[in-house]
Image (cartoon, rainbow, N blue to C red):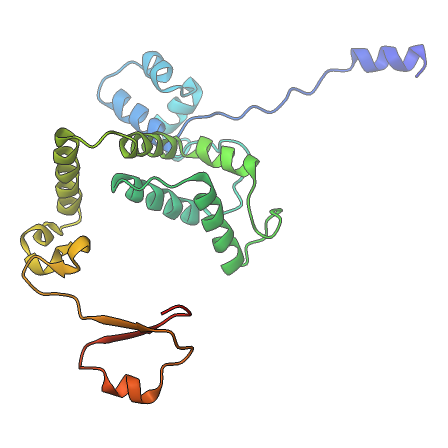
Length: 231
């Protein structure tokens, strides 16, 4: 490159890199509600990391009350992502945190079943998608981390009481608290029975590829016939 070309190149204005605002829909709605309840705009913008112009546009109705997209458009639809988020949060609430590989495998199934066009190899998202997903849904990281910490906690009297209290709260939210007072719906796995005195039907496992018809017909009513290589 000669000196004239270098001079032109150095004097041409640089295109600034595009910036993405990293704030969630939840924080945006909280900020709008706070200002409507009397909070100052400048302080609210600082507390929720919302650009002042963005908040004013929403308050004055110039732009719909929806957060600006964080990063590039996601490959899954908003509906699918919301379903995945709710699935993760519900399981975390029950004490079953979803691991990274489980999340990626679930997304892969959705992509393949719904035939969604993505750059993922074999429909399986990579580390870049995973990080972007957590940035779009920070509540997932917080709730999952909380559940993992609980699952690693030592088993104490206080921990067990807390677990049952959380279970009761969860069932009440789902309008299913009747389960706790219905003996026929409480299963004790170690005894293979229910608290109302009923037992699970016997299960006989035979070392057959296909159990003989005579054996199957000789089974008492409600008994279960199984098969395995070793019996």
